[in-house]
Length: 329
Image (cartoon, rainbow, N blue to C red; front, side, top):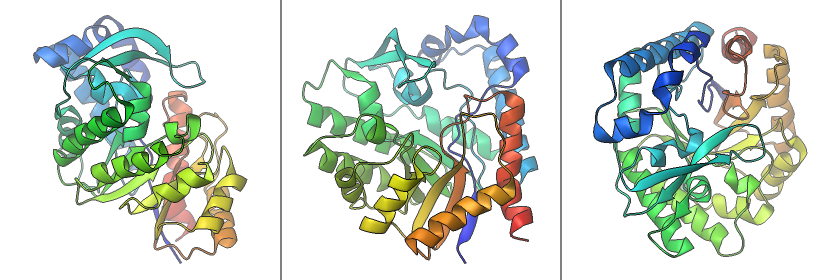
């Protein structure tokens, strides 16, 4: 039987009390972070948010604890939004939903900031549990950004990959790194770009000793994109079984998988809370149809969880935690 690891892709909703305390501060976050002048008031709020999110994951019994990304106002664009080489401009819709981020426009050569590493390092101070880091994947980050410096799409993707590799290299010791790649589904690369996208993932994955999980979501990868992704030196590929279980199981059965897989079995955008038994059935369904005999299954939400009300978010953490503490007991 596969080892089941209960975890999440991160991107958590802020606690209700923090939403009341932060509005006056949030507009200054990017400039404050770049100048190194993040106010003590703002820093204190985010420290408390981080500790609360970590404590809640431990209480739920998750096997991998994430920092929670409470500071990521621009969601997956955050690592660029805090860079001195990037201007944040107008508000852009985040894929096809009602969330928004500031457009990151790259105006100079990118250099790693260490911002995400500092967050994850801070997370390790609150727990002795296994810590998991999350970064946007290189293709998705390039897709969400605008290039006004490199001038060529292939060069820009390569620069984004090197930037993220530097961010990954600066991470403290973690068990796993999730690279979140929804753009591979939402705006799939064309011929040639699909191979470069795989190479970009490989660049980031090679920068860390941790197990690397590439996690597309909001559907299934096109067949050629999926096949190229398997060429990257990664430990696990993800399947969003909530958005499109049939196409995902087809890819796995037709083209094979990595030895480990990540299965999106909790709906990160729907308030209906799944039972641990339902989650286990979804894992068994995938396993039966792929005959994968996987070494490890990362049981996770199909998307980030910031779409959910806090109470439903917490209940879904509990369901995931119970998957490995109750159902498999």
